[in-house]
Amino acid sequence: MHEGVRAVPRSTDQQRAEEEAQRREELIRKVREANRQSANRPTGPPSPDLASGDED
Image (cartoon, rainbow, N blue to C red; front, side, top):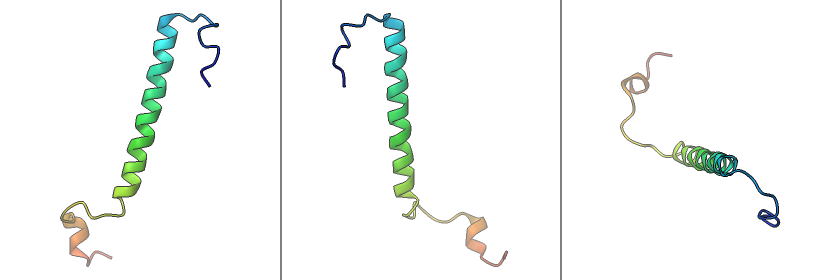
């Protein structure tokens, strides 16, 4: 996947921006996955709005 990277000279600013974008996307994926997993687990006491139960 990284073959030929050195053969194509790029400015360090562009390379830095691309690496930053990749890191950001990876973090977003990790956060979304963690949110998906934690959505199935209770994370603490329910909020008062949800606890009342007679607002239907």
